[in-house]
Image 1 (cartoon, one colour):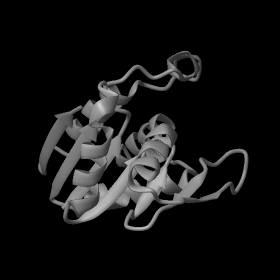
Image 2 (spheres, rainbow, N blue to C red):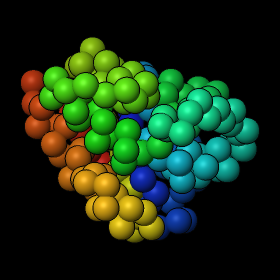
Image 3 (tube, rainbow, N blue to C red):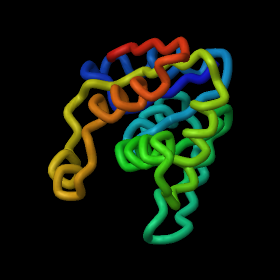
Image 4 (tube, one colour):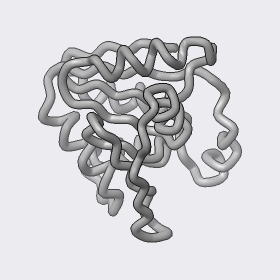
Length: 150
């Protein structure tokens, strides 16, 4: 089982429940989104280890109990490229794509709060979170995939 938490919930009052449920989920756990990672760590009182490798790579977050934690929309877009057999230098996207390929049961927990970076994504030809996740799901149609919008 692969669990992916990405994006903030529309209702901030649900942060704690969502984070606790995610922490208790069985299988691999991936958090995609800097704000999502901050929420998770805040709600569970965890101190992340943050490593910035280079200006061209997404920051790496190391969080107890989480297999991969990275920036969200860029990583998802790069993950889609990898799953579409295109090249990417994004290490977290490559690791995420590998787990998506290896795992037969996948659950996306997708926050629906407004993303303040939408303009940046458009300027850089990046698809928004829900749109890119739907494209990834299309590529993985032979797997059991569930989505939960929060």
